[in-house]
Image (cartoon, rainbow, N blue to C red; front, top):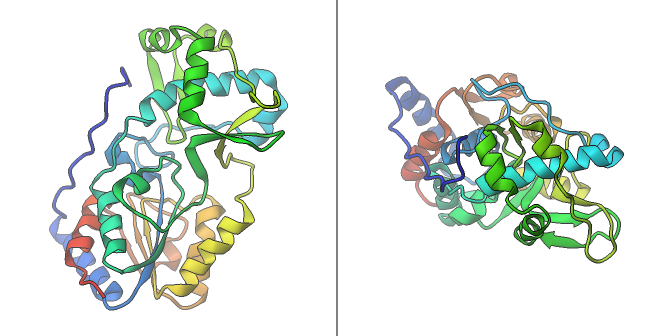
Amino acid sequence: MTGFASLPPVAAAEPARDELESLQDIHALLAGGRFAVLTGAGLSTDSGIPDYRGPGSAPRAPMTYQEFIGEADNRRRYWARNHIGWSHLRRADPNDGHAAVAQLEHRGLLTGLITQNVDRLHQEAGSINVIDLHGRFDQVICLACRRRYSRALLAGVFEELNPGFLERALAAGVVEMAPDADATVEDAGLIESFMVAQCPACGGTLKPDFVYFGENVPKDRVERSYAMVDEAGALLVAGSSLTVMSGLRFVRHAAKQGKPVVIINRGQTRGDDLATIKLDAGVSESLRWLADELPPL
């Protein structure tokens, strides 16, 4: 990235002929009943948000929960990078795939939506019954008193503590952006000088209100997600490599119940061997086609 301009969503292209045949098979499988949807970072790439494991993605080593709570320097590095990433991610707009999922829900075709993304683009597109499995990037939580704050409010605090930081980061050059609002820059010294805010209520450690690597998804979210799959006649996975168990468990759950599993993703996933139909294709255009073609119940 070279700047923090608004990110227009990418329009979905028409599916290729062989992809169209697979979409017609998916249409036949899903028509006439309600299904659950599980989405991952591959759905937000058309909104300008890079994913972790898609084709062409750079290798990443996200900070773990243990690293974050274990060292003050790690928290400084994380918040400095997150402040850069937030200024980028908050300008992203929903793309045609997000709009298609919302359309499917509004037409009564979904039991609900489970998303592994923290970007809140599904809600901006109009989806209502959404489980943010990994949390949300627009909130922070105090690890001591458990109070929650707006990430936008924290951004203002960071600006007061670190005047001109974003401008200097832009001048230094943003090297890499991640879907959890993490970012890296060329100037390591810029990161080391960053001032970190504490909880205004108790002085405790603030953390983004999403699940880190090495941290467990809250039990209630998992149970509500299972309930969505239980209520559904099929499971549609869109834009997830299913590399982490937090998403793969729902594919295994549906398959164990004998329910059809459809996976639409660029590249292989850990759930391919459980899929009734696997389509290696663009997620946004595939979802748009399905939303246009599937009849309401």
